[in-house]
Amino acid sequence: MLLLHSVWLLVKGIIGTLEDRANAIHLLYFTIPLGVLYILVPAALGGRAMERLHQFLKRLGLDKTGWALAVFLLGIAAIDQLLIPHVADGGDESSLIRAARIIVECGAGYFFENYGEVDWLGRQHPPLPALAIAYAGPLFGGDLLWTSRTLASFLGIGTALCTYLVARQLYEERVALYSVAALYGLRKFFLNHILSGNDNYVIFFFALSVLLLLQISNAKSSGIFQWINLAVAAGVSISLGVLSKYTMALAFLIPPALLLWPFRKSITPFPNRVASPITLKRGWFLLAVIGISALPLMVVWFHFVYHSDYVFFQFSFLSSYLGAEVDWTPATETVTVKESDYLNHWRLTFTLEAIVRKIPTAIGLYNLPLIALGAWAWTTKGKLAWSNLFIAFWLLVVFVPVLLMLPVDRYLMPAFPALAVFIANGVNARLKEPVPVLLLALGLSISSALVFVH
Image 1 (cartoon, one colour):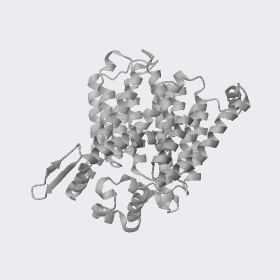
Image 2: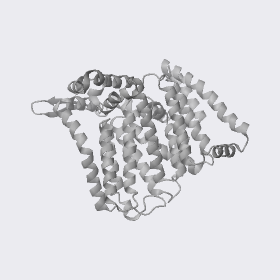
Image 3: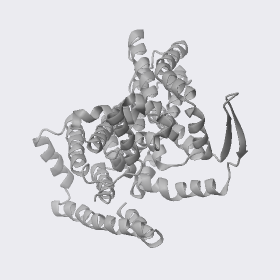
Image 4: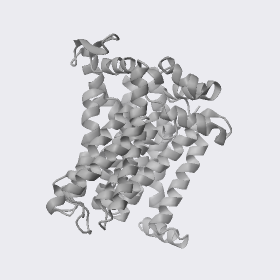
């Protein structure tokens, strides 16, 4: 892991821009001492280093999973508070805060009346993150930058908790705990969870929706009202995600997989548990409840967008990424595709760069051995087969459409909880002592974020 990370930094420093070279040098400053400590500290403690660590944690009362999870997340929150005031602008962050400031200074009415002119947001995104930052501002002293980053930190912790609960339903307790560490070990997640952006909202609502849907599938009784409540919550969660960013629409592919998948006819979907009492007929009913629950907020928003003529503004901007040039006829309210060149040079270059450089960088090249361990763990035939298939489905639901439409590394983040569970299952199955490896990945992830400190 250290070797991959160091080689990546050297290559980036040699062939990259001046800024890439500076970032690579700063990262090496953090990586070299981290690697030295990782090698020397276990050697200094002796061969029973992990046993002594376990004994120390037990004396502190931290041997229980719940305590370990709480201490880990509190540590992450403390690191966040140290970094939040000093991290450089994350790109879209300034645009999102400007949009929130319009709401604070001019009011929501003015904001929506001039939504199309709101920089960045009006061209391509819905408004929920800006509204959340604006209305949460007074609770955090009115500083919108600090408010937005604190909200991002809270959403990151919420995503981690959802990831833990999802992994606990699909695998065992240790895998669930390792999943949280693996999630923060993903480079882009750690960096983005302390920066303002609508991606933080999407990944949280996506993970929350999956968790609620798994709870429906894993219901131990036939309590119809419990199922309906969970289905309503899942529908609202999906709609809130769509109002944060349109890529959340991919989450609509998850409910049919969990409620209508033919696996439930003959195979127990969860390890060590009875088969789900949800029949195909009940699955269709709950699917309808989810759809109806998701509709109200989405109908209100899309009604506003359509009747404000922003629908073409946003549609034409997004379609340009697909190589299409469209024309809007207001009189007949029709959209005509004037030109379509999906395989144009710009798009092919953009996709190739994303696959070769940006996406591996976002995940962190040091995680590649851990991803390989996850794939190796799946070679154990018959072990938790349904859980493995669902994680694979979750990854494909996000990765395939994003790679085909707009391969931006941030847009893949709704799949990061599934990737973290995938890694955690691998290190749990194939390593005797996975904790040091996960801590190393976390350290490399944090060191990458420190480069963005002023």
